[in-house]
Amino acid sequence: MKRQLTLILFLILFVQASYSQTLAPAPYKIMPEQLETFQPESSNTLFRSSACDRYTILSDYTDNYESTSVTDTELAWTGSGPASCDPGTTSTLAKDNTLARINYFRKLCGLADNITFDQASYEVDCQSAALIMDAENQLSHFPPNTWACYSAEGFTGAGGSNIARGVHSADAISLFIDDP
Image 1 (cartoon, rainbow, N blue to C red):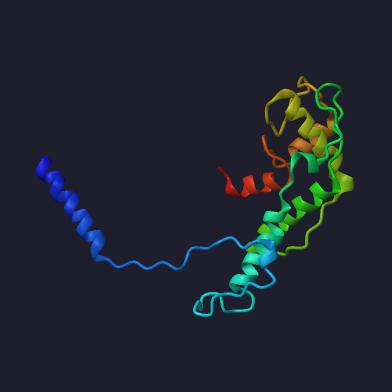
Image 2 (image 1 turned 60 degrees about the vertical axis):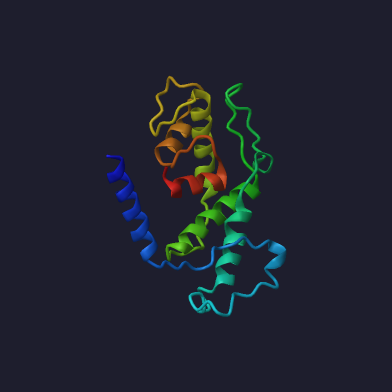
C-alpha cells in the first residue's frame, strides 16, 4: 500500500512538473499618490486599449471602490436605536459613497453608472426597516407587527429592500455582490 501511494504521489508530481505554466505578473496595489506617475508596463499588451488599460482599471478601483468604504464614524447615524425607536438618518457622505459603490459595480457589468437615489421616497422607509431589524436582531422582508420598533414605514422598507446585517452602506453593497 505504501509503495502504491509513493508511486501515485510520484506520478502526480511528475505530471505537474511536465506542464509549463506561465502566469502574468500578480496585480499590486498602487497608492493614490502614485497614480499620477504610474504607467502600465510597456511589455504587457493585455491592457493596451484606452478603455481597458491597467492604469485606468487600477485608478477606477482606487477611486470608485476602495475610497467608498464608510466607517461607523463617517456613517454619522443620528438615530437612537431600540431605546426610543428613532430610525434617524445617515450622513450625505455615507449615501454618496454607497451610490458610488453601486455605480462602480454597474459599470463593471456594462450597465449605466449614473443612477441616483430617490431619497425623498425611500430613506425613511429604509431607515425604519433597519431599526426594526436591529431592535429584533433578526432579518425579515415581512416583519410582524409584534417586533420591537415596528412601524408601517419599516414594513414597507423591509418589503422592498435588500437586507444585510453586520455591515452598512457601501460595504453592504459589496456583501450583496459577494453573495456569501
